[in-house]
Length: 284
Image (cartoon, rainbow, N blue to C red; front, side, top):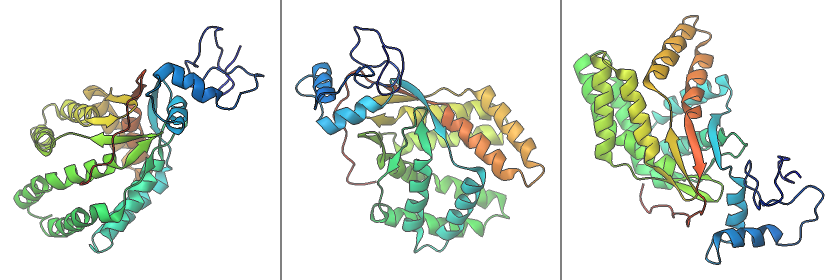
């Protein structure tokens, strides 16, 4: 017997496909109206999610890794365009939404399920404009090392706010994500990573620990995330990326290669009993 959704082999006794999570309707079996919802209700109980949410939940795999599917040139030029457009301040909220929506659509699970982004400019207007002004001011201190370092530290709250805004308005399946890491925790890990880079002591391991902290604080109604990349892997990947940047024309591919590797180190694991999806927060 094989799953009618993905074609994976099935045992006679199972009700759900272990590969894709879909209800175990065999190939060649006529699906009764509401059969998938009825089977799902038996699994999660009468108080489970609605039919639409159940179908979306079943589509999410039990375990999977994320992947980044954008092209190298698309990532490079869109990132540059977003960076320069942000410096005009007024269009910053719209540019941020445009870039975040494009970025989210290129991040997907290994079964093909892509993220969706629902953020609007109004929710980021103040932060985006302040961040754009901050970027303009920072440019004027590029030649002064002390002032540049101070400005980098002053920008930490902006980095936290933008990360939280992006995560809180991203969805996977029927469930939304939520970032519950505090600004103080983000600042502490940023400072630790910054100091490790300045002192050239264990920066790659500090960066890996920072990524683990961020991913650990990203919640989802139907599953959990974890970052599995190691410090020595980051060290090797960045070293190779720098070598790939030497010919100059290969820079977009080197950036995309490193970025994709980081995304691929994030693992997804679905919970057996999905909880109710957390609503979007009223604030960022």
